[in-house]
Image: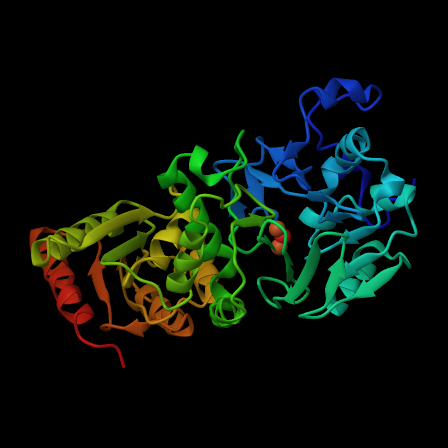
Length: 430
Ligand code: FEO
């Protein structure tokens, strides 16, 4: 079977416990889950996922690739799953529906974690129309190089399934140019693909059944690390959907749990997160070689706490803490302080990496400062400042340096630096 550009090793990512020769084995542990009378979940919960987007995103709680089957007078499938699970997905689907009964495949977004099973599926039902945006068609063609039966849709286009009707809503750059949402009138369901999603594996489909703190953390981490660069578009799209006055009882994303209990809570969070979100927090991100920059970081944190006991201070060593957790903490901070020793006339590899990620995420209205120890040339602070400005941060000062190992008087100055940071962040941003 021709798998196009994808190498065979991707198909070898499957956990060994799955036996494709005998589909009954995994059918027993991989059942369809009914959501409403007409809608069922037919996706894949990926308990073992620890990295997503290559190595860009850590998934401490696993994830899921949610696919939904709608059985009305017509049958529609919304999205598929990640490529390594394509055979498992199609085999499971066959246990629940005759593939030839599927009238429409709706692809809301065609990154490989949602479109990965198309080849396997369309090998069996090659003429089934694929409803997607124009960009979606380009992306599917670019990935799979197949001349399938594409039907391009735009915002407001509808597809009648019998008693229920689907309405398509384009959502470009949430988070790819091809993204669209789908609204189902019966059941008042918004299928939102990556929007409102979380990398969160769960036995249950619904938000009310999981740890709320963990769920909200994963939803915020997802927003901070994936959707944040597109906050303006997120904000506009939410306003557009709200102006359509659609009743929404269920929000069904393509990762993680379904928002069933008070689904507007995640919409309200998105409204807040897309509007230069920040809490009363300062995050200090540092790297250290021989502990001098670490001592500076701790003394600066002490100074911040002395000045304002209400401010939450988060100290994070970039080589020990998870980079996506660091970015999530920065996302909900009002100020970010970055420290590195000077190494080879610059800053450390790990600090370079996190600064590059911060720049890409386009955080808004945050303040920043830098610090670090040095032995002879001491360029790190100046270079960090330049990178922080490229990130769009407002620099609070020229930064703080320390020659060799900090003594008591230098640590006093670090504490003073911290106190001054607090004073500065209370002044209005330009
Ligand atoms: Fe979950 Fe952008 O794919």
